[in-house]
Length: 343
Image (cartoon, rainbow, N blue to C red; front, side, top):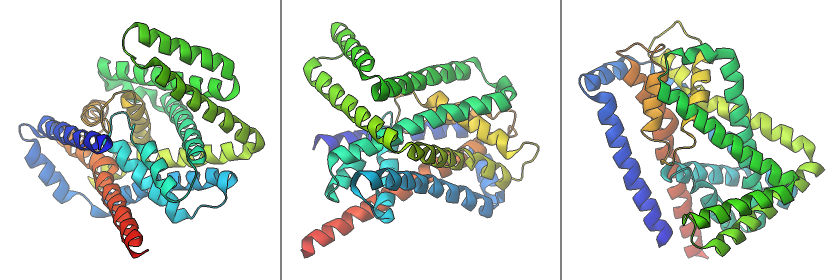
């Protein structure tokens, strides 16, 4: 019941943020400009943008199948696809994407996959995703850092905070996998500090959960030592996954008939944008993503088409995928209920 209420409140908060974002982007003459831009946009390019976002989810399913194979044998790819769509949906409607992996683990448990295996699977996927995201943004900054010249100060500040936050996460993950005593001291020291600041109240429960998480990372390190090639496979698939998501604005740019900037320019901006908003505790980074995107793409999309470019890009990469993943997750649940009734 508590989880249902949390998801309902998250959904309402998401809707409110979306409404405020629309008002911000479409104030003045923005609505008319958006309608004109959508009418003139090439639907084939927009469909291609949606196709690569489906590819984003497929890549996660691919990684899930790869990791689960040495843990509990082959898992049907359609099942992995089900977990990936559910993960996208619940990550999108909860702050800091906190609901995605727990929802995936619940679905796996219903398919008779043990919780330790599912937890280890998503710990490894999460760790590789964080590393890939930082690597991607770093390379894009080296190649296309000049594109940030038009960005306002708060955008650069958000990127710095996001990069520091993700770097800290990656550091803790690596320590937890390969140097657990140091990781445990850091984590437990942090919990004690939060207790003294009265931010954490149930210290023992938090410490127990933290130790359980650290145990999962240790098991992940053991698996990586046994199968080092698995890490390279996951890294390559995750980089492909990120490329799918980052390339959506390039398809929108082409759909609007614009020219003068390459697809790599769009990918670079998106790679930096994702890191910039990754540390914000907002469902799907709604509002922040649109605002930062608008500032960062000021020199790429024309002034008249900038709001349309932002809304179409986010409409494909987030809002359309939210509807698709939510619909498929509901369909999977209905099918499961129907099977249960027939038994």
